Image 1 (tube, rainbow, N blue to C red):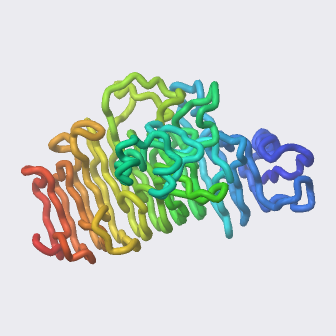
Image 2 (tube, rainbow, N blue to C red):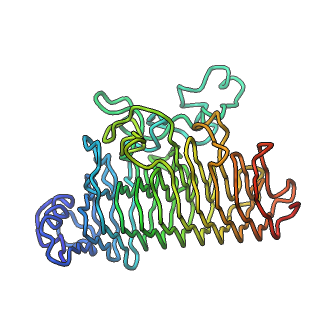
Length: 418
């Protein structure tokens, strides 16, 4: 095992990188509490750039906090095979990130950037209606006069101190993701508290044979910074992207600003080469060279609340999500007239086409929802079993099917109305 604080008078990022370069045979880097009596006097790690993990290594965060500094516009942790200028990440394997005790990843006090690549940075970026009408120059005069911002006025911008700075990207991108692994097999991420992430908490691209477990999220789509509640977009929990397969996601708790667990296989055509800014993908999207769909995933014991979207979301566009098990999903948010526990598919005007066989071989059991619906089926669901759904909002039926042929060979057991 290697401990970075033996390197003494370095920046925290330099000390961690020196420790990674000195990994011994067991390939384990341990981050304990920082020595509090060394300058600057604090017991947490404050990093200026992502911790880049090589393959065949384990990072142990031992009862301490790792925080992004206000100078950092980067991930907490990233597999070292991907990043700016790395257009085609080589295969990595055996990367393990493990928390022990109170292991926490904490966002910056003043993030340089938040949100995904569709969000424009603003500073300030007011969250509450009165502040939005008072301070946001993107709200139209008509909306200001009516005292009623529209939906995009609330969600088109996200907080970031890089807003308006020459030479800096004006939008979010993959650097806002907390933990980012690309093209990694045989991995694990477990026992972590991820608080106030700048975007998605965990994103996996083309990863396989892995486990994400015992993760607690703390995100509310906003945060009080400099006395103002600032808007922070796209604070998903765990996102599995194109090419992911044979992965278990379990024991996910807490609060997220967006989806808690999302399988997003969006295979629309494009020219992204990978390793570029301007996208929340870090890999290329040449589907002739890599797998577009997602398959063989287990999602279980997800308990918490999403402040905007869904507990679990399956989003296949121009490709397929298949062989999925979803069980023990508990929505702890208030009974409300929006959102749902599960969102399956999307309208074609959103991210791309939902194919008639785009979601197949899906088993869903033991779902508790407080949203307007327990399950929204906006795409096509084929060869599925749905059992034991509890819908605490009695105003609407528990399941909504948007398309005339949205269900094919779907069996319901213990679901009102089916």
